Image 1 (cartoon, one colour):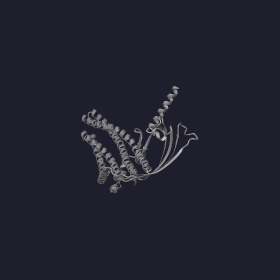
Image 2 (tube, rainbow, N blue to C red):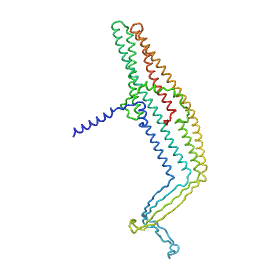
Image 3 (cartoon, rainbow, N blue to C red):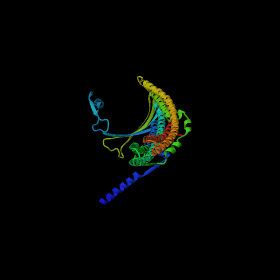
Image 4 (cartoon, helix red, strand yellow):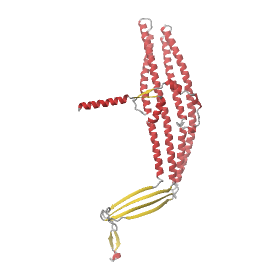
Length: 447
C-alpha cells in the first residue's frame, strides 16, 4: 500500500511538472488576440455586458403581467370571541352572549394576475436599461483598447530586455577578452596598471547592468503573462523581434489619421453620461405622474374544526375579484421639485464634462501624434548615433592596443557605445508604444 501511494505521489508530481513546463509562443498579434479573450479584465467586462442584458430584461419584466399565488392556513389555538346582546336571543337586556364566529381551522388558496397599465418611471426605466447596456458595451470596447495597448507595451518590454541581454552579454565577452589581453600585457611590463583597472571598472558596471536586466527580463515576462491572462510563471516564447515590430509600427499615414473625436470611445462614454443624467431628469419628473394598474384574482377557502381539508367531502368556497388602482401624487412638500432640480444640475454638469472631454481628446490626439512623430525621428537619430558610436569605439580600441590612445579614452568610447546601444533599443520600443498610444485614443475596435 505504501509503495502504491509513493508511485501515485510521484505521478502527480510528474504531471504537475509537465504542466508547469508546457510552453506557449506568440507573435504580437497572436498575443493581442489571446488577451482580448483571456485577460481577466476583459472577461469581467463581458460579464458586465451579460449583467446589463439581464437587468434590461428585469426592468422590462416589471411592466409585463405578474402572477402570484398565496396559500394561508390558520389554526386558532384559542379562538377569538365576540359578544352579542343577549336580548337578540331572548335573554336579559344589557347582558351579552359570547360567540365564536369562525371555525377552529381554515385554509385558503388565492392566485392573482396583476398588470401595470401606466407608470412614467417604468417608461424611463426601459430607456435607462438600454443606455446601461450601451454603457457596458462601450466599457468593454474601452477595456479591449487598454488591454491591447498593455499587451503591446508588455510584449515590447520583454523584447527590449531580451535584446539588452544579448548586447550586454556580447559586450561582457568582448571586455573579458580585452581584460585578459591587457592583463597579460601588463604582466609582461608592456602596459600600465591603470589600463587594467579602467577595463575592470567598465566590466564591473557592465556586469551589474547585465544582472539587473536579467531580473527585469523575468519580471517583464511575468507582467506579459498577467496581461495575457495566463499563469504568472508560464513558459512564454515570443516569436517577433523588436526591430521588425518597430519597422511595422513606423507609418507616417498614422499622422494623418482622422481627428474626429466623436468617433472615439472616450467621447462615446462621455455621451453615455449625458444620456444617463437626461434620463434621471425624466425619472424625477415622472414621479409626479399618476400610476395605473389592474388586477384579477381567484381563490378557494375551506373551514373545519379539524384538519380534514383533503377529504372528499370537504367543501371549498370559491371567490374572485377584479380591481383597478390609480395613484395620483398631489403634494410632496416640494420634494419632487427639489429632486428634479438636482437632476437638471447634474445634467448640466455632464454636458460641461462632455465639452471638456472633447477638448481634452483633441489635445491628447495632437500630443499622441507629436510624440509618435518624435519617436520616429528619434529612432532615425539614435540609429545614426549607434553607427557613429560603434566606429568611434572600434577606432579607440585599435588605437589603445597600438599604444597611441589611453585606456581612459577607450573607456569613454565604450561607455558611449553602451549608452547608444540602449538608446537605440529604447527608440525602437518608443515607436511601438507611441503608435499603440495613438491607436488607443483614435480607435474604437469597430474598424
